[in-house]
Image (cartoon, rainbow, N blue to C red; front, side, top):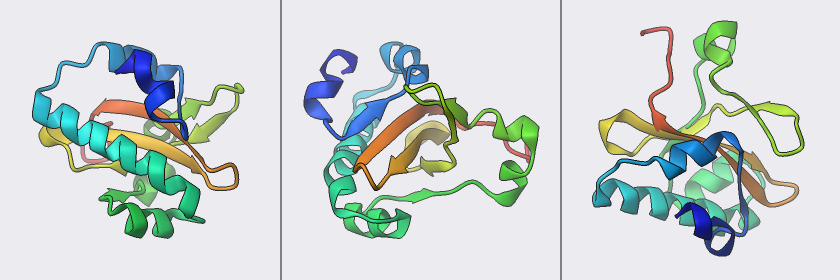
Length: 130
């Protein structure tokens, strides 16, 4: 999948942090299909959306933002502060959570440029509860 990402997902930008995660994926075909489907939806619908609510409705995706307890805790926040290709860091609080085994896909939408940055795919990141 990694080698084909630019061809398949022209509106998604995969941050450097995701290369190892995607190249070393050990998931079953059902989980892969969910991942692929979610990436396709993000890729397709970011061009028609102006905000997170638009994206959620139009793409029919189950995603949410992190809680205040995560956003306001520097230790928890750092797991979600991800470097963009230009070197700046953004908070990747939005995450799709319809994967088995509590896997999450964290992303950062740029509605102005109609792109979505993919920052993390893997196990549920630490929260105040764990």
